[in-house]
Image (tube, rainbow, N blue to C red):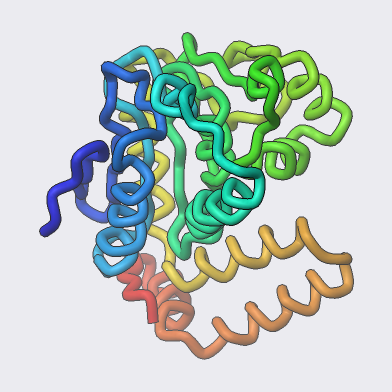
Length: 264
């Protein structure tokens, strides 16, 4: 197995735990972080059939991810055309995480700023520690959130609130994020990873095919009209109707036993 320099990876039964591991740099998205994330998600977690859910978190207690490594970028002034082309790689990485076949839970163990919040927005579910703070402060540096933040934040909190947060570079605490629906839960710091793992294992116990189709149907529904979304919902239901998992779920219900799902 390849050695990752800036990302930790371990498997807890049927859940992969991916840890952003640059605590001395607030887990910023520098060095080899992006290729390491790509490897952890798309070479390891995707290919491991035993993994049915992913938890992504940060090392230490200060930061989930503080975004771009400003010290690394401060001296760089790429030509606009070069930036436009190169930023596609980040968009591709984050989009691939957002559309990852298996559910992803972000456990925000500290600040999630800029690209860190944009990464968290790619998760299906977000759980925050009480001391976490979230925001997209790029505007105060003379740029904009450019890893999907202007789009994914808007889809979660609405255009007006997204504009307020982006235009002011404001940071909000975990409770405010909960009120906005930006996070699903707020828990004590020492309960964060156990809470995320408990939820991940509960999801992993469900039939994998049904989870995959449900995720795709919900995500598609945000992008298209209701008629098209309902068409896909009907298609997804039809694809599951003859699956082994559906038959097993029905048998287990009738026989009053725990089901054994295999993703087929």
